[in-house]
Amino acid sequence: MSVSLPRASTLIGACLVAAIAAAVTPAQARTLDTAHGEIEVPDAPERVVTLYEGALDAALAAGVMPVGAVTTRGGDDVARYIAPHLGDQRPAIVGVVREINMEAVVGERPDLILAGPSLADAQYALLSKIAPTVVPQSPGITPEAWKVEGRQFGEALGREDAVNAAIEGVESRAAELAERVDAAEVGATANLVRWMPQGPLVMSDRLFASGLLEAVGLDVASGDLVNGHGVHSDPLSLENLSRLQGDWLFLATLNEEGDEALAAAKDSPAFARLPVVDNGRVVPVDGQLWTSANGPLAAEAILDDIEAALVP
Image (cartoon, rainbow, N blue to C red; front, side, top):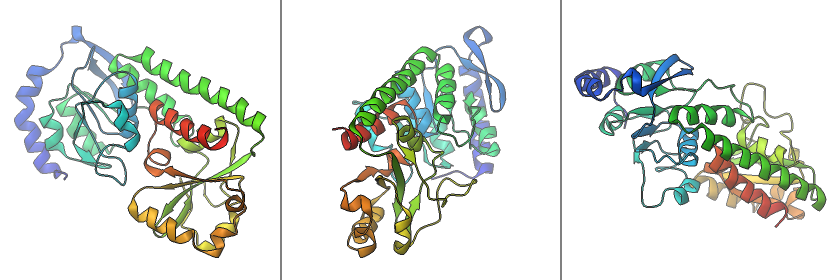
């Protein structure tokens, strides 16, 4: 549930006295350069709210348990791969993707808010009155964006070393896995597809998961179906599935509707004729992880899937 901007402004105004009383002093703060300019953040934030999946991932990788987070795309809770990193603690849900519940954010009394690079200016204006709000300076849609953003989140948390170590661990593991994939001679190309009720979407080679497939030695092909401005193709008809010619097909679904659509497609002759089906190289994966998440923990989980499929 979101709060309209006028109502949120009134609510925040009523909370300003408390917010100012809890604000850090200059001696307790550090200055960060963010997408919205320089801001002061607390040296050791204790109540962190994350409004972006990559921020939640980076915080947990850095050893910080947020008090609030948003749901994953296509779900009503944080992503499934995050659950093992929560233990008995769970962040309160303060909104869904692109729809923040300002009342819920205020209720968590954050001393730091970590947001995504696509946060709207109007939302930033409101959030920054609640607590210092860090929007990373992102390079945009590139396979390496998660590293750039993650390091900025680590700096905001005062945990740069922990996040850097987590990223370096991913890079080291991917390099080692690339050697094993090369030695196994299991194929050189892959397609990443999100299966939706309206049809399969071929995912761009500029995405987070595509970058990890590339890092282990697989060339991610999009069959010229993804234009330079998008992150996936238009929905394909089953008749156009023949354009997927990779040696491996990683199939992601976000929810039960996608699972049902994929199950129906598997009964079709068009799907059965794909070479990857005949070769037993279709790999079902979690769409919440592969096509929505990013961060060091997500990277490790994706590498788990790749290792299990290619070099078990």
